[in-house]
Length: 293
Image (cartoon, rainbow, N blue to C red):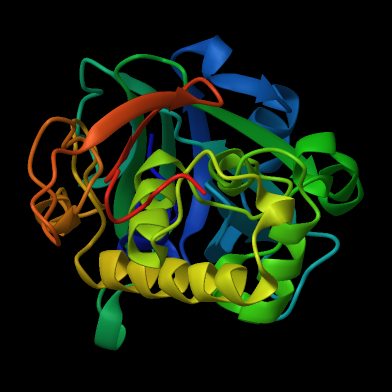
């Protein structure tokens, strides 16, 4: 599923296309794609303006406001449309009149002000999801803040000092790979970037997090940040279905050191990469560069 870099890339490519647009209506083509707040979507979204598009962990959020309330700031009266893309969720903006595609689940019809005095332009924002695991939830702020999943999210890795992230890892009694995957420990990291960061830090994925020296965990946090930023610069990793909001694939998969390379030679030492299951997820590591303590 899309991880932090992929969702961040979708946000950065989607926001310029829809921020400021006026929502005219919503078409729910697959009701189960709206896990909560379907009544809010149908009754309250029409007439609201897209204030901003942002990411929290692996969630993509559209913040809507009433026209005239001004852009910027945090709106406690805003309506938040929270999307989890899961495995195959995508966003694309199409011209007015575009028919739903085979896997289109939600359509938001928008009116966008024309540039340089031109006439307003109508657009259609499609939420497509081939495997239908993705979802939308609609909340006003108090309910969003109280949603258990949202409230339980850990710190954002790119916004948190490395020492603070290391201390979060240090508190965990399970494996460091499990700690990286736990969204309550650090938000937005999944299998790809956990494996890659552990390789760069030369830490065995099964090592007990609380047993690792704080200095080693700080090093891990630094590598994690660098890898996330590099992936964002490469528009994320396209393993199967991921595309940004312009339809472009990412390129960071061409930089993988270990993820998905079980049985291949380590790029650093030439040893054969091994694979294990940790926290139910396939994990690839180098037995030479990442020895078990």
